[in-house]
Image 1 (tube, rainbow, N blue to C red):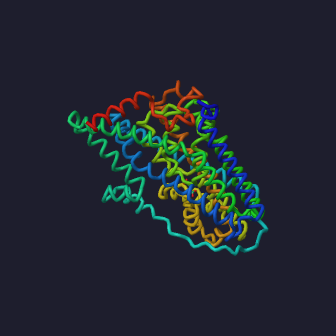
Image 2: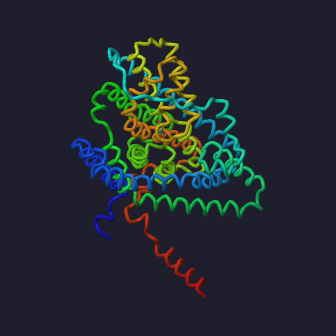
Length: 450
Ligand code: ASP
């Protein structure tokens, strides 16, 4: 095994990310990102686009079967419907709580920094709001009329609902259904193997994704909106490193230092894809294999969190509301801000973790408190980069709540959590067949030939 192969995958992904940032910025700053230019056409919108999109597709491809099989195994593994109710209730409360804290601190920070005041210019960029679904519709849509349809569309809440109900029914049928449970367990293991296969190409894909984003980002805009960007990034980092880590420590007693070290991989995937949903396979692998959370808990809390828990997005909404209110000289007052908090928390439940969805939620909040929707046009230019950062915070929140709930249920293996190396993938490991599996494969092929 060469030296290179001993490098952990996380390390290699981080290197890919660093190189991607450097190359992308170089392209952006040197003006090579002009439309029609060779670099833009062949690399940024060619190679990087194709490689990045293929990788994101591969991640998304894993989500539905992984959630489906792991939830069936999870429900059958718990074996007690009351425990399932408890896991659901606790994670729901914690998700709401962390989101509410997130947006409240964001508003407080942004308001005391006074961002946007005196900036009366109107942006050229225009934003047309897409409607966010009303709560009644969200509730109705939890029950799928056609489970296959929900899976085909990748609608997370109906898939979760159907899989849980299926798991419960399997449990109730009892012994006769045992082969189905075993089948689901095998299918789950196969899906996890597929996750490691896809992750093996992550360093290159992350490089392509980030290089493209950075090359396309309007850096001048970043400077123009410096107040907004600095306060938003500050609030996001504060939430990640202080609030969430305090919540983790207080509710579970687990080490924040180890958590931050192990969550890095999922954060990088979230950062490069800007989608909590697409990151589900990596977050799930991280909490189960790196942090020791039993899959019976993680199979539920991770997809659930990716759909309803968006701390980072809520923070963006808080900061953006204060910013736009100041730009347009609107005084929202305490009542207005309380409405913003409530709306953001509710909006995060109804919208899925996909790129850019935060803006849709923001337009819903603005309508409610009477801020001009076209104000969103002002922050549009920097939203992609902000989306990347807030998505990393979103998935970190999902993992924190998962650890807390697992610990409270006695479903967290602390020996695994406390082992810094546990579950770490080495670069060549993901694609390696172990000798036993290889021999087995050879025997099977031989048998088929005969
Ligand atoms: N991209 C975010 C996520 O997937 C949602 C958003 O803030 O737009 O979690």
